[in-house]
Every structure is written in C-alpha cells, then in structure tokens.
Image (cartoon, rainbow, N blue to C red; front, side, top):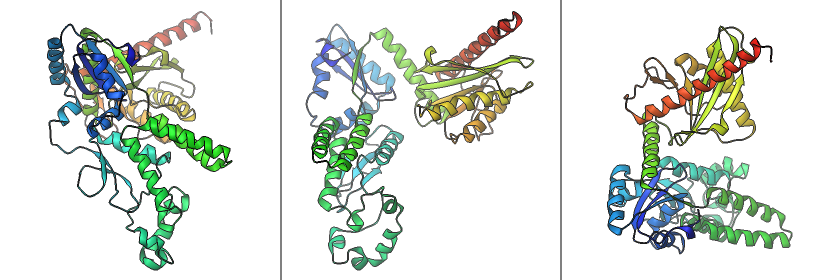
Length: 443
C-alpha cells in the first residue's frame, strides 16, 4: 500500500526495520498526516533521521477515537518495548556511527561513545550487528571509500616537500606496507593519491547518507554519471554506477500496511517469539527465515530428505524442497542429512542466493554434526544452525556439549517444533509417494 492511501483517522502506527522488528510505536489524531510528516520533508531532529534510515515497513491500525489510539499505543509499547520508544527516555550506551571530522582525513567509525570532539555522530542504532554489517557493506562496495587505517597524519604532512617520506619517515615506512594502499581498496590520501577537497567530498556524501537523504545523494550521482559519460570519462561513470547500485540496494523503499487489532496481535506474537529465539540461541539477528531438514526411509529403501521454509514464523511452501538421497548406501541417517544439507547450500552458494537466518535439523548431535561438516566443506561454517531432538525437545548447538532446554510454554520452542514437525510431515509424505511408485512400478 502507498502512503497516500492511508486514512485520515485516529490510530496507531508501528515502524519496522528490515528484519521485521518493531522499532517505534506512535499514535496519531490523523494517521495519514502524521506518518507523511516523517517522510515528506527532511526531519529536523537528527535522532528521527537515524530512525527513519532503518524503517522499511509501517503498520497502522485505525481506531474510532483519539482516546482509543492513546490506550492502544500504551498497551503496545508496554508489550513490545520498541527500541526507540525506550531509548529516547533512557540514557544507556547504544551504538553510533562517527565521521571523524576531528581528523584532517576523516574515517567512518563504529563507536558507543558520543563525544564533543568535532566529529559528526549518527545514532543511536538499535543493535550493534546492524551497524557493523552496514559499515562492512558500505566498505566492501566502496560506496564511501574513506580510509580504514589508524595512521595519524595531517594535511601539512602530505603537502610538505617530499610528503610523508620527509615529514614522517617512520610512518611512511608503515604506509608503504599498507595492504589497503597496494590493493587499491583505499583512496590513499596518505601518499597524495587524492586531494583533501575530493576526500572531504566523500565524507560529506557519507554524512548525507546517514542523515537519511540517500535519494538526494543517488539523484546527484546519477546526474554526475551522465555528465561523465558525455565527457567519455568512462572510469568515473563506471565508479558512480557501482556506487549508485550499492546505495540503492541498502536504501529500500518504505511500504505501509493496514492491520486490525486482532491481526496485529498475531504479528506481534510472532515478532516476540522470533526475538526470544534469537536470544535463546545467541543468533546475530532474529531468524526471519528458517530452513528445516528431516530424513525419511525404511530400512534404507527409497531414502529421501525434506527441506521446509518458515518466513516470520509461518510456513512458506513455495520454497519447500525435496531430495532423493543419491550418495549414501545403507542405513546412515547422519550421512543422508549431510548430503541434503550439502546439496542445498552448494546450490545457494553457486547462485549467490540469500542464506537463511537459521538452519534447523531434526535430530540430535549426530545429525547436527553431519550437517555442520557439510557447511564447513562449503566454507559456510558460520551459518547459524541448530538441531531439535524429539524425546526431550532438547536443542543442540555446534561446539556446545550441553543441550538447551527451553520452557515447554516458550514461544521460541513452539516455532522450532513447528518447523521440525512440518519437515517431518513433508519428508514422510514424499517417502510414501516414492514407495508407492516403486511398489506399483511407476518409477
């Protein structure tokens, strides 16, 4: 739904980030005007700019009166405890991004300390991993190629006759062995490869991005790309094209979605369950996409494996997959599990497709170990994975000798059980189909 289709009525709006987590809840006398005020003009409050840079979806619930919106807002804030609602009335230490204008050649840094040092700070952000992942993505794609080193030098050191070799010979020896210099990953202001004016322009572009004005930045780059092409400066045009593609990738559009209070409760419960599962398993982010595996065979005949997918706590059957076991002979469930996991993620890796937030294996330590070995062979050993054993509903994690036992009424356990049981159902159904075809000679 587009913003212009929102109603002019009282209500509550919930802002979600890319992971689906609710990060802010607000009330409005007029939903359309209130939400539009965030995205229409440039927000004056820097804190709001940072929040909006993370927003990807706005849910809204129309209610009959302004009083109803106040009651619903307070109920949801108490239940969900969204980051920005809590943070704006708290003084805890949260992650910031800093552009170190206190240096002649600024860097883009992650920090938890906001100081009056001449630098420009953006934040706070809800979670450290989101900030670190964003900075890593911007660095790899060279959107804002600012120097990553900690070398201390000034403009006068670079512009002095003989450069660093004369002004700071000891530092110059370190610079000459810098991997970022020799790989071209850094614009290398330390050796005069870029003027301070051009370098500061990159820093200003980064500042524009973190102010939440990525569309304005993209528009300017698009114009500059066209001008470079006309001048046949294809190297500059290609560089701008790559930076433009990268910034548009990390700056997705915001969509809005109407909900009633009943449906909202379902989404809120799912969001809480996934957050609880993230905490219980020590995952880097909420497992919005879970892929679950199971094996089915009787005395090693017609062995098969299944893979089911849950998106935001619900089955997503379009992405289910079946596997006929091809490389394992005899009754070896561990090896069968290893084969299925290997084939699945080899293909995703070859296609450069997105990986799940969590892999769930039906079984105990043996099945988990086989799956982990397959991931390690594919150099995907850091991919989050766990197994759920049926008898005691124990959760096993790689490298951990003791199992995790979640409370029987835990929403996190219920999600794991749902994935495990659906994978089992899908595997058994496929196995029965295979046996029937074999019995009746339909293969």
